[in-house]
Amino acid sequence: MNISTADAQASASSAVPRMLSPRQVCDLLGISRATYYRVRECGDFPAPVAVSKRRVAHPEADILAFLNRAVLQ
Image 1 (cartoon, rainbow, N blue to C red):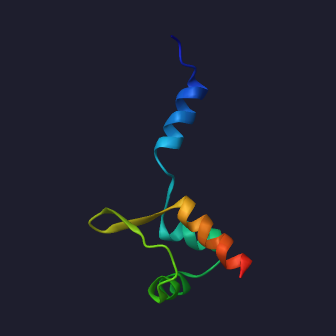
Image 2: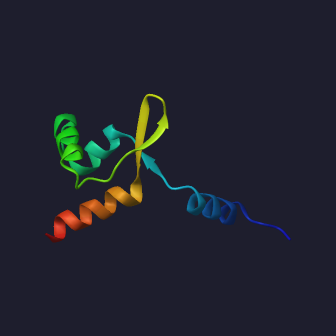
């Protein structure tokens, strides 16, 4: 059985969620870093995932869901 490169990439991308750094989240939402930390503290924002001791990231799907909820309100 031969698996094409596109099939392998599609299955790999669906297995591992894309992670966004706080900077990428700010760029996506159009907010400053200070606003990012304020919104994160209020409790409505998706919690970050610890990637290492000093680095966090957010699953892209969580940020997009948050953005959709914010737009619909």
